Length: 448
Ligand code: UDP
Image 1 (tube, rainbow, N blue to C red):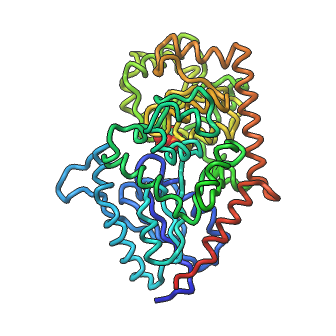
Image 2: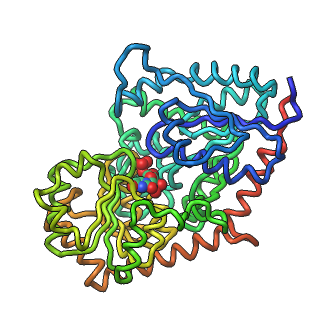
Image 3: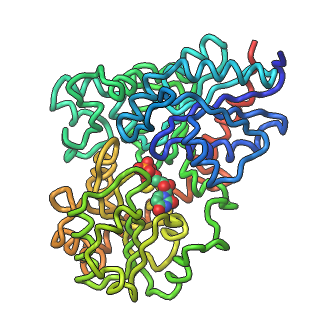
């Protein structure tokens, strides 16, 4: 078996927007590694087909489907059940397919880059005597909270002691896994194991930039071997492969070209979340009441719930599409506010293109991200009462289009956008410097 060639094992967490950023990371790092480097991408077949259908595959990425935990003949589970079956099938599903990949390629792994959730990668790497690089696909704020799980569970007051958060941080902002009654359930136990094993990672890589949360990052650096913020990945390269101005299949960009500067509301709730019917109706009524130009990323099951005749009545000033070119939309000068569920990718994309936000978080790190948007970075608002009502939505939208406060929030997000651009500047941007450290780490280790 060859040991001189680089063979990087990529272990993806196949739910939400986790696997796609890992693939993005591979695409970013490839040009800096020897041309014969092999990447083996381990992910479930469902997630593989979804992410590789959106991005053309590189020749040197070998795609492996690992078992998703669903027994043959059983119905395909969805939501939490699918996640729990997958977690139960780890780590043996990864281990088995990784062995096959080494045999098939005839090249031993030189490094493991895994989603940080997959903490058992530490044990794989240890056995193989190669580095483990953990990729935390969310912000440094949520990573920090997970590392403080024991302290947070010990008493309420500790929230005030966690560096880098405002005093408005509440227990209700915590990711549910951190404050779960028991840490034994599949998700809480996976995240807790991650928290207690992450110091073993040779580096923890984040899709964020240090200047966004300097105090939190200083604290993380005191707890982990290497903390490498290399984001925002969407703007990391000057030749932005993500913005595809030539493709405007949905006609959104052409439509935006004809709207007034900063006049359009963009609404999107990520890849997993489905809004409750009453909230879909509340948003629709608010948009119609104010006749605000909008683009709404809404899947067919949501469109069915819209008030009768809504599509016809708003046809002149609104667009509903089932999958939006989110980056191109956020980058467009006509967009004035982003209504979001606060998934990390969406938050960072909003910041990268300087668009203030209205937050309606649901699960995971979203409530914490929403708190950061409103109280720490001051670049947006949480929706009144935690969910959309017609009056709450009108009031939040009015802030951005009529009031002084909206101008301040916009100015703040534009300031963060500048910092993000500084971080990815080629000469000495902090994310670029961290990226170089990552490349060296991946390059230098050979299996023994
Ligand atoms: N996205 C998109 N078009 C849509 C909806 C979402 O391109 O209509 C992308 C969005 O740009 C982001 C990702 O899907 O990169 C959603 O990730 P996020 O972390 O915000 O949420 P999740 O899907 O994990 O809940």
